[in-house]
Length: 440
Image 1: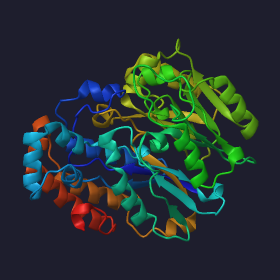
Image 2 (image 1 turned 135 degrees about the vertical axis):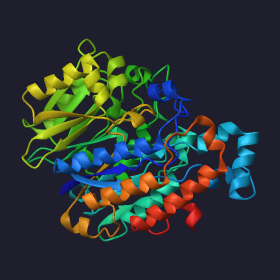
Image 3 (image 1 turned 60 degrees about the vertical axis):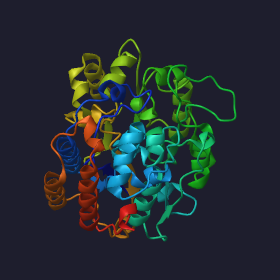
């Protein structure tokens, strides 16, 4: 198998609406002007950098915003332009919710299990229902359509429908999923959760816990994982209250390596002991204490929302946001990781400020999917990174994206028309077919 990082291409309506309680960066920058063109080009540069390290790279398309289908479901009628005008006049908060740019964070798009781990030997993908936040829940149907278009061959892939909605099965995707593996041992799937819909467990007091235990259990069943290789740790309530709304804000793992903050999980020493028992002596972990790396700095700088990548030479590298270099405690921790006895030998800092300002770092922007050569060959969509595709997408961005998007610009029906024109062209470039509502 080879791992491919499917990055979300940041869309033409990238904006800062401050819609997510618990996401401190999102709340801090809400109402500010954004730079959609710069944001998309930053994301493409990250894809280029990862590909040039020798790591598999691919792309997922943006979602159309505002979501006109959602606005029509909520009672706004007329032409596309009339729907937007009426929503802006009568319920601007709904227009802002349906104009969210959050689908760019494809770590939340789905949870994926590779064919090596599933009972039927197929890759299993389940789009996240994201029911905790309305502006994110509207992503699920389009994500499902996109994944079905890319992973279309039923011989190799099983694309499930999102879990049933409502609070009981709230699912936030791979942002709460970590796959670990050592030579000679079966892979272990950490499916973390923040609250239980059924059991009485202590939860956060300040911000909502988004993933349920019941959703994590359902994903393990759907993906036909060996129950003995599934671990279900609870996110630490204090970590969530500090702004770690997803696991990947305070923990990241890759193959035999896991780095985490002490407030990532409840009873992390017991979790690490379980992982050592399942993965053997080759498993390595690095824990940041709150004294070494205050959780407020971890949430501000996102050193754990980094990509830990396996390189062709057998070592690993961390791709971290530039904010981690600029925050002394975060930089010192990452330097300690590189210096210690583990597979990580380098850390690289990249500028993804446009995404960071909205609450997502390098790890938020990608969905990890491991594929065999046969599975890779079964995908006919043109979504795998190449220098030629990079230039095509960069030219597409420069052709269609606005340089600046001000908060009131989401009221402009012309923006929606520009976006539909751009995305219609993009589906042809990526050979996806008609995956958007407006193309039906």
